[in-house]
Image (cartoon, helix red, strand yellow):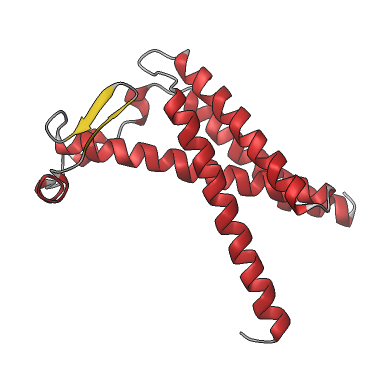
Length: 171
């Protein structure tokens, strides 16, 4: 592999393909394969009940509250939704970097990255709906997209601040 092509493959293409593949693999697993609830039940979660008793809302037509769920189920719900945000935040950043390798326009790269995140998030939820015990949810597509936006905003903000710090000679 030549220098520039090798750099592209190692630093841009492989991380993107690895992360997209990880999401693909994850959406093919059953709920039982992914649940952390058995691990959570080993912990004393009384503090969750004490601190979050006031939390109550519907998500995908199901109630999310400590009145409707055990502390372990409640905690797992937020872990799983946080994983959606984190996973698609990283995907957005890796997609942006990949596109920026080819296109100089930051705004176009950001727009294409977010469009990809929206499409891949939709595809991911569709794949989940094909697995027993899993369901694809429009709410999760929105959460995936929000994660992509958040990831890109944080990445670009940090990158801009670091660039400004290095240009001004500060460390």
